[in-house]
Amino acid sequence: MASKWFNPRALLLHVTLVGWLGGCAAAAYWQVTRAAEGNALSYLYAIEWPVFGIAGIVGWYALINIEKVTEAQEQARRDYEEKMRAEAQAARASDAESPELAAYNDHLAALAKEPRRKLFGH
Image 1 (spheres, rainbow, N blue to C red):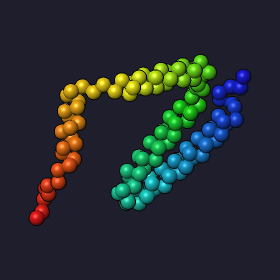
Image 2 (cartoon, rainbow, N blue to C red):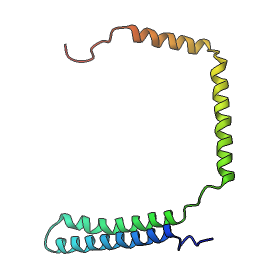
Image 3 (cartoon, one colour):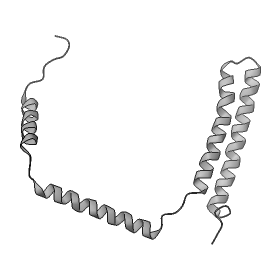
Image 4 (cartoon, rainbow, N blue to C red):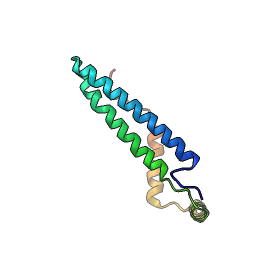
């Protein structure tokens, strides 16, 4: 079994993270130098790029630690979906409408037939 840290997917994620952090560090340095030259907006960007770098680290960690769904979990999901489909089918087949629901549906149908009133203008 390959290690989760050294399989091909993980190595690609490592390389991507290094590139991402390098880009964020370069952009942060650039914004700090711009801020030092007097660009007030660059102070915000100088803070923002390290935050993006941290977000990249969090995403990298999450992607490295994703666990694959096992066959048992997949079968449990399929069984649950089949049970829910059967219940929904049974609910549709019963076709018994309560008097309150019938009255409400009749009210909505009557409202739909009425011409719409203008709420603004002439």
